[in-house]
Length: 131
Length: 405
Image (cartoon, rainbow over all chains, first blue to last red; front, side):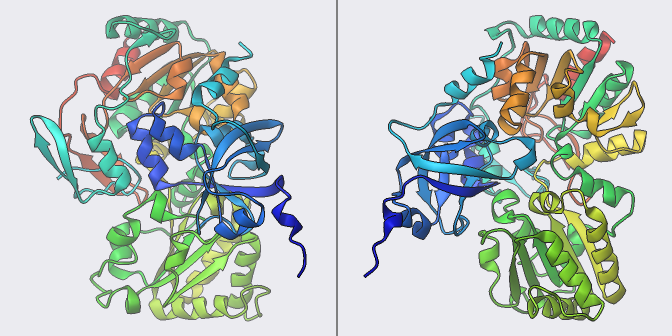
């Protein structure tokens, strides 16, 4: 039986597709500073197969990095995520990672992280940091 | 009946029940739509200056002062407000020789422009419901972005000339980079084309129309074209996936639609989310011949006048943001630039942009607290009927800002 090295290879490079997610959009009206908005926005969706093959479990907190910037997000499994990639709902977390050349699809790495997901205030601080 | 302003469908059959003056139940709306009504009092914006809560009058005066003193103003957003408010914003931009732009610049403005310039044939959702056989969703997942699109307007309803239901009287085609919830519906009488490269798929259709074998989807593309000939009335809904997939090369797409129309009627409609984006595009087009990215000083439209480009090039000193939250939707580098600009936010709810704004002016939620008119993605004008009346709405605020210009 071949060894499944991929199980132990935890930093993976993926293409992230960005789109609408009605459950997340619903949280917008409850408040962009609400816990519910963070819960539904600070999320990266993987397929069950792809997640497990790369050693990620649902609920894991991962560091998602792109273009020299990183955010901590929660892994969720979904059968509508790209087969060998990831899906993220439109939100300030995506905006933080992308630039205009890769607005709706971008390359990112995913690796395990300690702690909790990135808070909105941390991103806001970053926005204001150069002022 | 009320109109939901959650997306560009502008569903006009929403019913609400009140209990002690509070909306307690919402009927017919989707998840997003119901949320707008039920969360009416959540996360409401307060008037503020530099993050400090103040009386509305003070905030308005400060906003007037900033507008008056601005030499290079940009007005941005506007897609969630009414035509009446959009007209005032355009008037303000004209009087101030300002820039004006909306979300359509990086959303589906190009598609609306193609329709307004009659470069592609278009239709209405009512016509689609009554007549459409082959229905494409290309680069869009209406299950999440326009949740009642399929059930109220396109795939599921029985139309005047489509009485036999979706199992027999509709043929669904979904083109997407991933198997979305909409794509999962593509089973019987349907095809899912997984898009690696949109141009290749378009070339595949053109090849098949010219009698050559397509290089990809060799079986699916000829079958779809055969169904389109059978159907006589067909429609392509294009979303952001298509826009970004085409990367500005719209000629090939327009050629495909033209060729398809030699065999059967094929219409094109944008599948965008903002409730009154098309309204803004139409108003600006009527006035200037352009749908967005316009400078009233230079009397022309240019990529350089896109909101994010103006921020990038430090071309504006003041930004008036109406009903939009660019911090949520624009990349970080532009958010940083906006934080350095005198920003006035007009919005009914708390936004990220509001947190970095010089002035926040709380407004009314269109369709819930204020009436007016909006234009759906198909160009249909819809009158809004508010549930409650809030005096301070976008129109009121924009009129106040116009007073000092």
